[in-house]
Length: 157
Image (cartoon, rainbow, N blue to C red):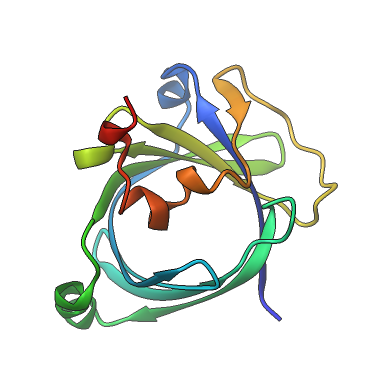
């Protein structure tokens, strides 16, 4: 089984921008946002992807994930079938110790939300926490992109 093990954190300042080695623009929509089987279409720069994710474990750190690159034109066409609420964000990649943090700076209806994710080899994998990391939100479903597409950050205040 394909598994993704990751942890999520709120970002408390923009100093991560001093150290990033790559930045990409991401647009994604959900063909199905059921918590048991999320199906996402994503365009990252000039690449299309379709991703299927399963339900998270009790800690919110581990879940099934399958992803396949698809033709960019086909990915663009699939957006017409997506549920309401497209997610747009800039993703910054930052090396910290032996890991790469991915920091998502959300745009559109989620403007103002900044989340860092780190993928781990196992749930006990040690990682350094940079000074721009704040509260951990791993497992808090309101920070899942599929939930943000329905209840965007602009509605939280």
